[in-house]
Each structure stands twice: as structure tokens, then as C-alpha cells.
Image (cartoon, rainbow, N blue to C red):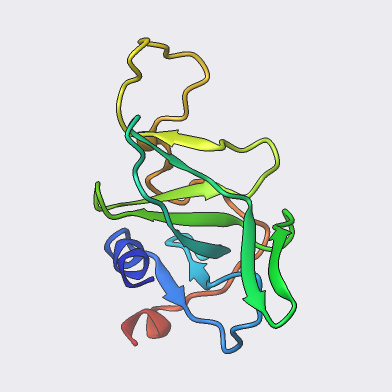
Length: 141
């Protein structure tokens, strides 16, 4: 979480922590233009083929065993995936047609079609519907 927060601040955004841990998102971010987005923060290990995987689910264990739940599009706006091997945070839209794999390195077969390159996901790129007003007085705090 700390790496994601630092990355957002470096890019000029304002990360905000929710008061409840029972939300489907981990951060609310006020973007430079005043729009806000909800992020789900995940760790993503680099695979040997130079990719990270976007997992559209969450899991937990309790007295009744292991549980899995798939995220819904309404749960949050973006995944923030931290890849420690590359020291990068990747922001992937939470959409059913979104990429399942993000590629850092060129594939051995030199395929370039339908590849989701990491450079396209290094910042939050879409304008969401919600806006939080940011006045000059608020920016000083």
C-alpha cells in the first residue's frame, strides 16, 4: 500500500484512506483535476515470461474454509498493482473487458497484437463521474 500511495503522490494525486476496512476498495484518490476514483491495491509478482496477472477476485479463509469472490465493476474503478521486481505501480481499469495480463518484456514469439504493455497503465487515465472540489486552501494542508 505504501508504494502505491507514494506513486500517487509523486504523480500529483491525493490518496485518501477509507475509515472502514470492509469496503471493496482500499483507497479513494482525488486526481489532479479534482475527479475521484476508488482503487483496489494488490501485489503482483513478475512471472518468468515478463508479465503480471490481473486477478479479478479476492479470497479469504475463516472457520468455514476458503472462500473466493469475484469483484464487480461497481466495487471500485481501478486495480493498483505493485510489482516489486520492477518497482512499478500499474493502474488497470476494473472492467470485464480489461486486460488480464500486463506485459513488461517483449514475448519470445515477437507478438505485438493485442498486447497490454505496461507503459499504457502507469497512471490513472480515465475521468470518472464523481468530483471532489479542491480549493487552494485545501491544497495547502
